[in-house]
Image (tube, rainbow, N blue to C red; front, side, top):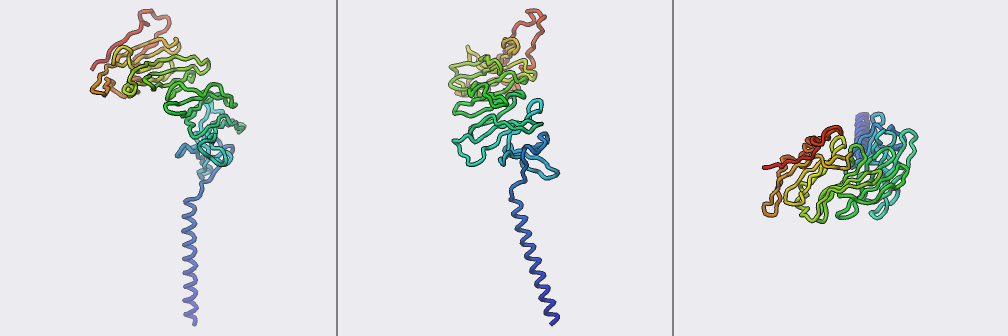
Length: 309
């Protein structure tokens, strides 16, 4: 009798252990797919974020990684302003979302007070954004084919310029005073620059050319100090290309020219660019010299040379 009781107790214990093990297994499996821990952006120091997949933002809260949100919606593309006094970020509008609604929001938060201002609303065509200075941002938006527009907005939500387009891609100058737009459409190729404050524009484009063939080589770039702009484009008079460097502070007067020999092999264009167009322009910018004003006119005279095969 005692033996039977002992055996029964052992079976009961084994059953209990099995049930606990199974329950633990399913609990662990459920936890692995559970929603991540979250924390509102106003409750975090903004200098310790980590950007994850799809530009989502994470914060390490005492060893627990938490997804950063705003009003329950995850934030993404978070960026500190140049003097680190404000944080900008995208987030979705709460509730239902569809491709026709203004679902994408850009908000700006004061780092110290945590006060948040919604400055931009857009739909799924909204692209990147960046700071101009602590009082202005620029937002980019796909608007068709070919169309890529920009809008300049104050951190209080006032639209200062746009939406409109200069080109199909954009680069701010290092001092963030100028916006460079790369042009490639309807047999038109080159670059346009705009002064962000005065809206004065300078165009460096060629028209009536087979832009789809030259577009592989066409390029434009700022020097690291923002004092020079280089544009690699087709020459007007023949099939060759030319890299031209402009003096930004001197109304974009030409500082330096280099001709790049090109030839057509069948329908294919081959140009003598020894490196990638980006690397080539960087080298051209390094060769262009801005002479001090007291230098003689002879030293400051424009010069050019032809790169041959």
